[in-house]
Length: 430
Image (tube, rainbow, N blue to C red; front, top):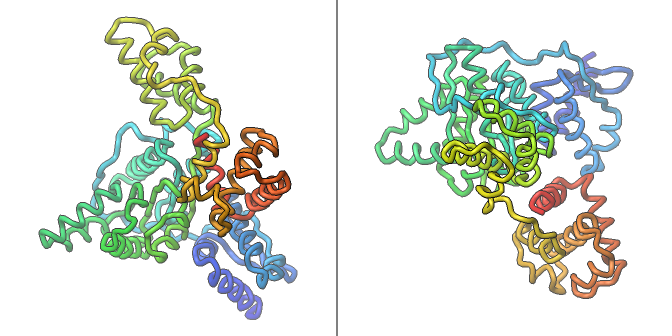
């Protein structure tokens, strides 16, 4: 039995050497068992199992020395696994910065946000236990802040004495600066380290702010060690946040990382129906469909358009109709121009921090070569452009170069998170 335990401990140690966040997640959330010469990682639910399995697969792909050992590891689900400790008694009550409209009841769940919603609900039901921290990322106006506030409301409803604090990273920084100027840093530390749930929004804005990062690092450690819940949001996944210390970035991924994508048409329709119902306004189905079909950038713009139409209808005394929508939203809903290879080149260059002219040059360094390949791949898959058209647009490259580029990116999409992220972001913008 002792040998089996040592073998499993060695495995966890070797995983920690290459992915500290994954090892910490397994340690806190799962059980390790030895069954017929194999190591079984037993997870409390399917969400955790998928996260652990994906992490192990990535290690196996990138670390050949661990591949054979990981082939003898299986990841399973057992709902009876309860690795977390019971919550500690709440400290004096306090509820700060929460929007009363942002609750789980008003959040519309769709394929784009189902995992983030499930993780948020789990955190609200058992804060500080399994999913800590919870890191939610996605584009602007997709519902990250809504979920964070919903967690705060639900924790407060279940535990009336709990102290829940929501703060943007910008406000956190400004308050720290003021506390330094007024020599009240002790009070600042007490305010954020004596909470049950800390919800901190837009963490990417800590980039380059060394003093704030230092303070947040110690706040994070204090709360984490005390089994207090931390929820963080960002517009990008932890590994892509630049100018933030590695020790912080690795901690962001200790718990669960869940993304929110732009809503599909059906979800946008459901959101508009929900919002009109909440406001007690009857909106014709053709108007809801028109708005959902023409405004697909983010939820914030979608709701803003609906509010504008409702206000116009009320002030002008006209019933809501397609005619009213077209008149009032003429500056918002515009005919869409078809994307071009040139547009794809520009978007890829922007995402990768290079100039389009550099992409089209003869230089062959790795970042430029990757940018060309991604742009060729998107031109082929999104525009359905011919090999000849793509080759011409990239400086008269022959068709074999284009084919090679498309194959390289297809392979990278299954194993390279950075490439996959760039491709997805450009697709959304197109």
